[in-house]
Length: 244
Length: 322
Image (cartoon, helix red, strand yellow):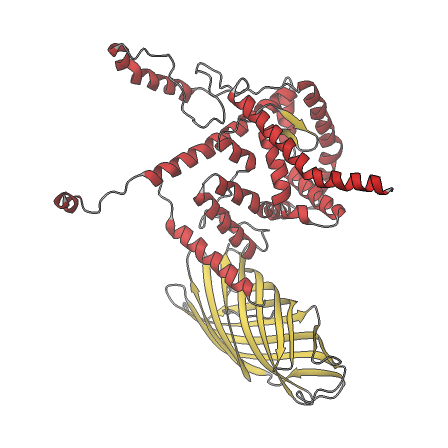
């Protein structure tokens, strides 16, 4: 009789556990990923689920430090190991210091990347991606004061150098340009934030940063991507992708 | 509405669940009755076999007088011959059909419904929507059917089937874009969908399928398999979509999409049959019999492997230990 493949069940168990652990946290912009597509060379889909902890500084009248937990689901199509287009649907919460906090809101991301191989193991690539939050973040900071943040969006452009190991693991790093803005409405002034009542457009303080990460093959077509980003403040995340 | 009628109505509503339960019980009991007795036989040269009974073993071809040692000697050979006969011939399964006249009317109704409504809509839908998109829709609804399959596997004590279903649901939901794609069925993961339902579960546990019924819209069934229709209603997430018009729309979309992927199958079977009603009845009964038999075999092998004593790691050491 054919023995059950315990390795398969172990993989199922691990993936199921990841699903339940990830779904307990908040769910966006997300990681940039390796410059080279992980889709099949002949062309094909790859899908991923990812998490990123994001910190950033916005400014208008005064600096505002924000924190976000993002979870996203991604579908990509790439071919020839040189190009890829992708879309993400995610959710993210938003905290501004200890003053403002709102739960998860939906966001959508579109991106594309292109890769140019220099030698067998090395290559350079570029990516562009943009994210838009479909809903407003709202919090009542006191009984009569409400803060509303709407039209939050960001755009990123970066280039990366990638090295591929014989086992298929990819190590990558590079600089990126980043712009993000949002409309902030205050029903009355908030001394903690240093803002008076009214509407403001806040934008990110640091327009350039750097990213680095690695992408390693797991088993059965799955890959793990871990990445850190720094643009004034540090963000980091992980994603598990599946190549069809 | 007067207070009196309102009270009667509210009492009726309270009792409704009991009525439904009693009706379901009568329904299943009728399945047991037919299953144990007259209805289901495997007919060819082999002796009658009760379908969906607790045991799948085929009785010996002829009764052997065990008092005679010579007869006893040949028992094994005869049993082997009976197995060889069965192995080479197609099993033919029959079912009681006491409601044939009513069933023929509903069969005709379903036939007209298919040719006059479902098929034209499905053909139009097929012309507009490309096949990969229709397969994705099918995958999506199949993924939503996870609760019924998962619970059926658990009720059949098929743990590996339940784990496979849970894995499929997780992987297809996350990496299959909400179930639109089916990466689990690929060569690498090879987690195949467990083709089972609550009707098969009852069959595995020994409930006979009973007589043949053709439900309007739902099609061929038996009292036992009708439990699947009721069970799926409660276990299908689409059943909880509100309002009812949206739920109806989703269900119709699912059925039209499914029909668009197999236009021609129904027509082929119908055209090949002298009496389509009998052909569909036989095909249905045959299919369900094979499904229940397969699930039983899977359960038996799982029980056997669980009961197998584990061999000692080193026979020499175990000998020394004696």
